Length: 253
Image 1 (cartoon, rainbow, N blue to C red):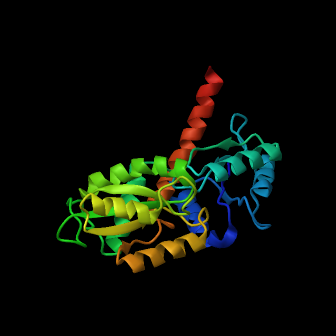
Image 2: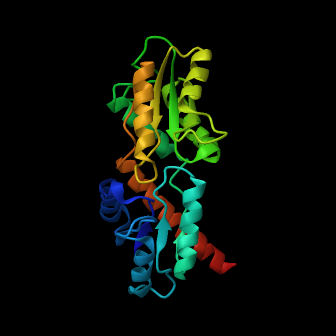
């Protein structure tokens, strides 16, 4: 049964494709199809139409759509539900990949790759000799920032330094990356690092570029986005299975 992932821009097909292959071969051993909410290529509606005609067991849905999102992004999730509803295909829609401890693990490892945190679980940052802090930058506005605070707590517990979340896109009513860094510094963090909680397709590249510039102007460190980090494939498979289990449980009621 195909799993159809739903990023919202085709510019990051390399990242999405790598995660799809890893999920298919290493975890689910099920066919994986990329479906985009925007653009004319690999449209989610086309992927769903193909899935509906594919051979499957009688009790299986035609597809499980796993949003390629590291956390809730309300506007993308609304578009996803609308696209699936308009297709008329009785596909299941899974939850976003995070918040989850594996997201915190991936953020930690991206910080370590940038030389901003120890690669092991020793609870200190290597970028400073005094207090440090991490700002997790997420797309999606205030609601997404609120959910990302869960990842911030998990990351802080791994690093033993304060961590907080901010809106990558600086949406109205949301804490901006600059404001979040200022708050950490007011709380005693002498050095701040930014950790983009971004896979790729769900974020505007201009917002990532602005975050990089902000970090450079502030003298702050910045890690690479999550991208195609292998733990995300584990989460895709987990959300896929959870969606099926929930559907089967609902059928028994």
